[in-house]
Image: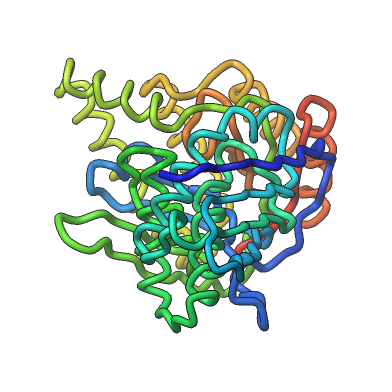
Length: 339
C-alpha cells in the first residue's frame, strides 16, 4: 500500500578483507544486522535438523527519517550498501516486500506517516552472506528506535524473521538469528520457537569466503529442493541421515577446535549438497581451488547455485595463500574468523 520510491546507489564490490571476530558486537550502534555464513546444514535445516552458522564481522546499518509533515504518505528507500553487480536490481521487489513486512510487524503505517530508509554498512550484498536478513534486522532496529520502542533481541529477531518472508517465502530463521545475535550459533527449527545456542571457541577459526558473482533466488532453490524431496522421499531421507552424521562430527570438532577434522567434514557436507543439486560448476571450481591452495576443507555456503563458498585454514599464512588463489578466479574474496 502507498506510493514507494526507490533510490538505489549501486556500487561495484571490490576485493575486500572483512574485519575479524564477528562475535564482537558493535557498541553504540543499535541499528546493525550482521552477515553470516552457514557452516553446516543449509537446506537440511529447513526440515528441523540442527545447523551451525557463523556471523561475519561485516554488517548492514540503517537510518530512518520519519516525515514531520501534518500529512505524508509513502516510503523512500536509499540503498547505499556495497553489492555485487546486479544484486540490488535483482532483489528490488523482495527488498521492498521485506521492508513492508517489517513495518507492518512493528505497526508503522506508511499511508499515514511517510518514512525514508537509508541502508549502508560494509557488508557486501551477495547471495549466501545473509544480506537480506542483515537488511531486515537493521531496519527493524532503526524503525523500533524511531518509534521510541525498546525491544529485546528476541523481539528484533522476530521482526527480522517477518521481513525475511518477503525474500524467501518460508525462511528457516537461521539468517535473521545470526544477523541479530552475531557469533557462532547452533540453530534448529521446531514446531514452536526456534532453538539457538551460542558456541564459544577456545581458538579462532580462520575463514576465507569468496563469491561466484552469481545471484541466486533462495525461494526458487528451496522450492526446487522441496519438490525433489517430495518426489523421492527415500533419496532425501538418506541424504538427511548422512548430513546428521556430518553435523554431529562438526559439533565435536568445534568443541575441540579441531580445524583439520572440521575441514574434512566441510568437504563431506559439500558432497551432500552436490547430490542435493544445489551446487554449480562455479562453486565447485572455487572449492577445488581453495583445497589445492592448502585449505583444510571447503564447501558452498547458503542457497547454492551461485552465491558464496567458504574455506577453513590452518593458520594465517594458509589463509593468505587461499585468499590469493581464490582472488585469481573470484570477483570478490574476504577473510574473517569466528571465535
